[in-house]
Image 1 (tube, chains in turn green, yellow):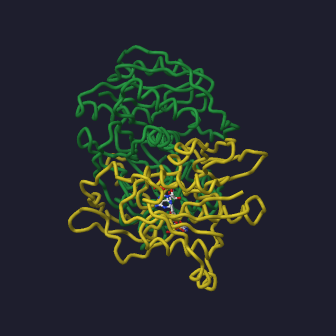
Image 2 (image 1 turned 90 degrees about the horizontal axis):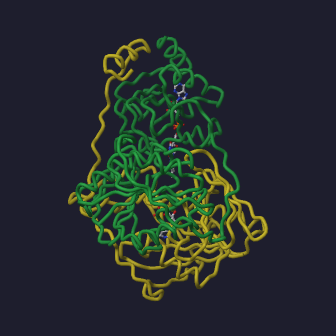
Image 3 (image 1 turned 30 degrees about the vertical axis):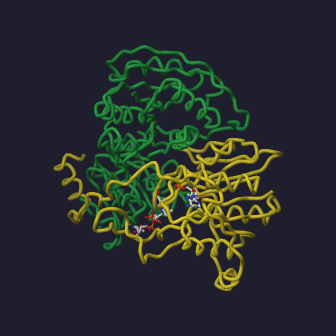
Length: 316
Length: 248
Ligand SMILES: Cc1cc2nc3c(=O)[nH]c(=O)nc-3n(C[C@H](O)[C@H](O)[C@H](O)COP(=O)(O)OP(=O)(O)OC[C@H]3O[C@@H](n4cnc5c(N)ncnc54)[C@H](O)[C@@H]3O)c2cc1C
Ligand SMILES: Nc1ncnc2c1ncn2[C@@H]1O[C@H](COP(=O)(O)O)[C@@H](O)[C@H]1O
């Protein structure tokens, strides 16, 4: 038995979602009694493999470095992954539940003729896993009868593993073929000096109550004082106030920071699905009956246009 | 070009579901059932492609018990040309649904398959990717914009880092994200008319697919409840409390 973790990276650096997935893999490795390999698939990504080899608890790094895997297009990556799983007799494949992981892993699972378990939040034993369904309103425990178990890992449910201190070998794999049915064209990566939503210790999120994209600068000022990330509700993204990568919720990013400050957000179940596991929740809303107050540790009924500038001033 | 659309029947997104007393499943009995919101976006896109002349026929397909014919009627009322019901009372997991769709794809040979990115009951986010794998089609998941260029479809995808554009050779599978379009409403007269339209029905046995679930449910439990905390009366009090809590 062995576990293969698919590393999340941008050909230059390992991304944080990998660290949470390694924690899940270590818990599984203990229960299943097996070793962990980490796959770095991409192009010109040997530096990533190099740093991955220092992750404690990983026994081996597999490096697949070739043009066909550059952007990890699923048409090229999934068949390659499926073959790798067969040739190395891998029994578990784990990927972070990011847009990359969700894109590639189900395609590989179908090629292997096995199910995928999405978004696991707990490992019960070597074949039993817990995952949220219905926007987190129910927790389903599933037992898998497949010979290869593939799963995506909800990163907010597992603490990040240490990424340095270990040392293992790197095995270079053969190149992947280009299936010739898909091409990468371009990417608009949102640049920000603030922490990423998925790793931030504090998140300040705005909703429709913000009224405009410009008004989000009020939240950014607070975020900068706190070293926080800025998030948003779907309504704020749909209205064009902020870009899609800021959406928190059932169908956006799932986060669990130490402190989540929801400003002008009503608290629909789909939004709560993305943040209700935060340690401390603050809600600022002018409607005292807003459902967000039902999950908030501290609720302030106020007009955000007064409260947010005051908060910024109060933080010094 | 034919477009095949996957339509799933799910509990209305506004309902907070309850779990059965024996913790075996979510209790969906007597709840309002609707077309999965992401499938609504998928069918809307298919209809717009037909209206713009890019597509010639829109076929909606649903896998499930007879009750899901209700959602196929909605698809007809919205403007689907044909609907296919793949009938089964068994629990169907994404791999099984993808295999059934693959059998339908082999019969119908669509130029494009449009799915939702995720069903809001199971929150799986798998079926489109799995169908793409089984049929050998490329996939454009989490689509927020589509354009045709020659024998390719250009898909703008909502990814964690922002937006990504890919070109896929047709036929392709595309899964709809929230911002692909704003679905139209179904009108009552059209819904009445749709009642008289035919629904093509086929069984799992007709398609010759083994749909035995690979995953079995052990339990379904309530998540830990979060209770309302306290109200603070001013920003100063809020900051003070957060500091005392160690959150700031
Ligand atoms: C399939 C599906 C998936 C979805 N996925 C997501 C998701 O991933 N994430 C998500 O967030 N939503 C999601 N939604 C949408 C969700 O149902 C809600 O519509 C959305 O979260 C509402 O956003 P909001 O709270 O910003 O807006 P609203 O519900 O309009 O709330 C605005 C709030 O701002 C308050 N307000 C207004 N002005 C002020 C002011 N001056 N001062 C203080 N307060 C003020 C109001 O009192 C109100 O409570 C999804 C919906 C569906 C159907
Ligand atoms: N039983 C079904 N019938 C028709 N389409 C389905 C069914 N299950 C899933 N789909 C399609 O696959 C998409 C993603 O579902 P899922 O993988 O379950 O999250 C849905 O939005 C539908 O378009």
